[in-house]
Amino acid sequence: MPSIDKVIEIQESIIQADSAFILIPAELLWIIIGIYSLMDIIKNKKTISSSGFIMRGIFFLFTLSLVVLSSIHIMKADFSMNEKQWKGDYLEPYMNGLPENKTYVQDFTQILEIHKNHNKKIKSIYFNNNVKPIWVELDVLDKNNASKTISVQTIIKKEPIEEPYLTYKSINKDISKDYTKKAYYETILHIPEEYKVLVPVK
Image 1 (cartoon, rainbow, N blue to C red):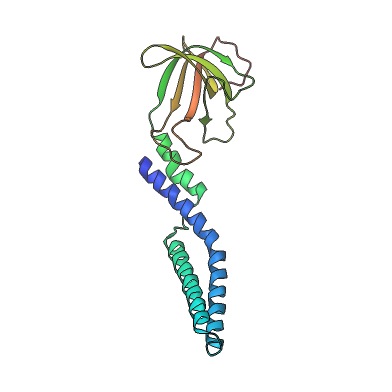
Image 2 (cartoon, rainbow, N blue to C red):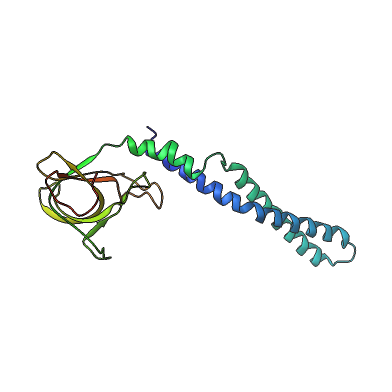
């Protein structure tokens, strides 16, 4: 299983590659401008004033520095990895290797309309795009056995158990803007088989 630091490192390299790719047209434009500026200096070196020559020289050096800096950025970029490969080779193996958290549920209700200020909202992320989670409100016990209410996205799974509980995975630092430590991953609300629900269950 790759470490979270390695997952973040590869993700950041993809972002750098994306920004470097955008720089390529800009670099070509600055090269053209630089060539034109140099030709102008050579062509008019006998007719332009010393101050004009200095200004043109400064502009050419400025253009040259931009080309050099963008070239360095482009050469450092790793174009061998894309977002899809990163998810398959790094993110998903890392997530699959994480331990599951288990929280016992005292009560739950489905939320038909989730509001911005609806308790503590926890978004859930699944790597199977066919999964369609719903929002539920859960009464759970925290680490100090104090009751609290949270709203979380989850799928529901019926099992031969007596009490409902929630399983999910979490990360201790943000990987990207989409995969953050505030979210839950692969969240499942396990409920007894005799419970009647109006939503699809596994």
